[in-house]
Picture 1 (cartoon, helix red, strand yellow):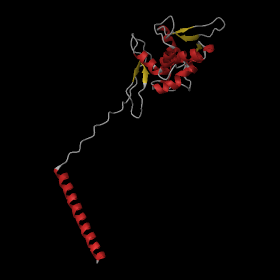
Picture 2 (spheres, rainbow, N blue to C red):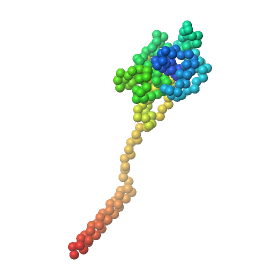
Picture 3 (cartoon, one colour):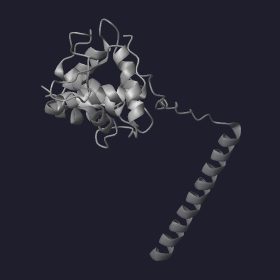
Picture 4 (cartoon, rainbow, N blue to C red):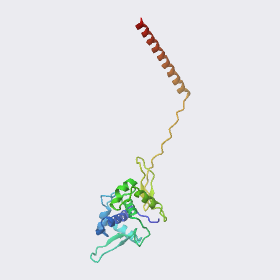
Amino acid sequence: MNIRLSAVEARIIGSLIEKQITTPDQYPLSLNALVNACNQKSNREPLMQLEEAEVRAAVDGLARRHLVMEKSGFVSRVPKYQHIFCNTEFGSLKFTPQETAIVCELLLRGPQTPGELRTRVPRMADLPDAGGVESSLESLASRPEGALVAQLPREVGRRDSRWAQLFEELPDVTAAPAPEPVARAEATPRAASDLAARVEALEAEVAKLREELWQLRQERGA
């Protein structure tokens, strides 16, 4: 897998894939619509505030790499853009609907756990069963041309590991520390001496209580 994207390029590709699936009647996107999609406050992490010039420069770079193309209709003279990143005759990346939705979510929201993806993928693709996300992730991680996703080390405070797309550089994560082995208590001479003294004192206390109890019984018997 030799496609490498910057954070802005990943946001653009993810936004184009998302809008193609969720709002096909408004796709392809004008530059203004693409800027709004990139800066959208829902289904995005982190939030971005990209300027039109920044998006235009990134789109031009993606077009030169044959990942985005301009497509203007006969009715409108406004340039519109569509991705040719996957599932097109122009590229080699072919995904199932579930894989497309997973890749799109990872491009838009960064690393996520399978549980998080299970709640987000259905807005773009049906999940046939509870294990659909895991099986799709495994398929994307074992592609013949190279892994497209990878499982990250489990982070401190997280129960499940997150998965990340490999079109961007992997984020730095702090793995959960391995549990430290329980130290074996080793008796020291001083500790043994203290323990013996405590036992002796307890035995003396018990003997004294027994004597007092015996005397009390004798008095009552008299």
